[in-house]
Image (cartoon, rainbow, N blue to C red):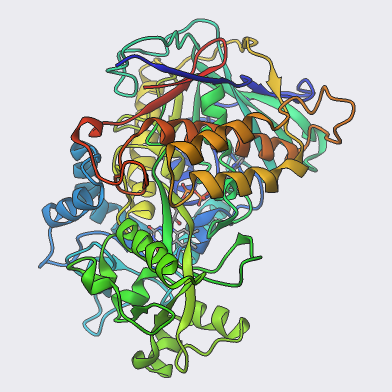
Length: 576
Ligand SMILES: Cc1cc2nc3c(=O)[nH]c(=O)nc-3n(C[C@H](O)[C@H](O)[C@H](O)COP(=O)(O)OP(=O)(O)OC[C@H]3O[C@@H](n4cnc5c(N)ncnc54)[C@H](O)[C@@H]3O)c2cc1C
């Protein structure tokens, strides 16, 4: 199949020239589960590790994760059973090798989390208590603080980082927004790497090696403002893309920065059309936007039922696992049921579970609902699907290597192949620790072998971009309407056209009010991700996993393959 050329995008963000420069051996970008794990592992193996994060250390989606982390920890369960469930959720597009790694290394990584201080909820026999979530056919979800799993994992990992923060081997810089990945001229962005194998052609991919990052630091003395850090290994752990959509469960910082920066650096992206919309997000009225409260899948795992606004239970007729069917199945069924009843939401009925159980098993959700004036032991909860997780991202091999030498991606920013067309619940925290550990070990081994060497950053052709922050809500609205839960060639073409009309040269346009600063850089990233996502969704003429096309409502075996997207040296967005 030949490559499909799309719009032209700039190959860097518009920003002032770096006012300061420093060096490291490995840079980790992001302090969610993936970034913290990578930094902790690298610290003992590489002399100078720099961990940067755009807000505080305790940040990212990890802090918000409720339900838990999946791993075959019970003797009655097995990695093979976990593998089978993961492959089933992935709609035929998961990479079995990547899933094998996930499920076999997962239990050990969870035990290491315990050794690092994470306290999981215990069963009566003293072992880790395990529950079940949608798509899992065994109890294998470890949770903490009832429904505060991510907060507990973050707490434990951040405590470990704080304990070594003043060691000479690691430097932690908060309030540091990475703008772009620096690349050399000497290109070894390997066409033969797992990430790019099979590309038919049309991509020069002459991007060179990764050799550092540009970043904007707020309030760090001599390193205030835009600077550059040079390093032969850059590990992106920047999380998801929730802010590309109007409503999402992701925090405000989920602007797809790592995916956009990797794209601009010449890396190959994959599975971009597969966005997971969580079926049960608290519905707060049609005007609600930004981060919305999630009602965890574990609530359905404990027996809560989905009803339409007429009180009719609809999931048993849709799937044999009813409310516990894979997320895409539940989300699409809800959207169809909403259309059938003419309502903006459906209802999640947990009344029969009882006030005391709901309060102790789901303390966080209970509190959020009470804040919203809902007593869920007395009334069903209004819910609707919202963006939740990105299965796509920077294509990597099993060691987190992207197609650009020296550039790694771990956690939600990566496309390891584990999730395929749809993520199985609670597999993302696990993917974060498993692949961050592997990437850190790979960086360390290559560093020891002298394979990772410093390089000279080169200016990339293709110009720079800046989108005014004021354009963000329009981008979100347009993308949600046409590239959201339900898509068609027509809706996607309209999104493409309307995103193409957004000015991406705000820094050059005297009449546009925009400064190169955080809100603008993030909005430019949101724009770049929305364009790449829409391009992949337009190309995939079928329905599979998280990608639902009304004009192609069935899966088509001809599409049982990953769509890859990249920018060529002229900045043309290309997909095949
Ligand atoms: C409400 C909610 C509930 C969830 N529940 C579960 C669950 O129960 N189980 C499960 O497995 N998964 C769950 N998920 C998904 C899971 O939390 C995420 O996929 C996972 O935490 C991602 O981890 P990460 O380390 O890749 O990224 P994140 O935790 O999102 O961290 C990203 C980090 O990168 C930083 N960053 C981003 N851009 C830049 C930049 N330009 N420069 C510097 N730093 C940057 C951020 O500040 C942040 O520190 C949930 C997600 C949400 C939102």
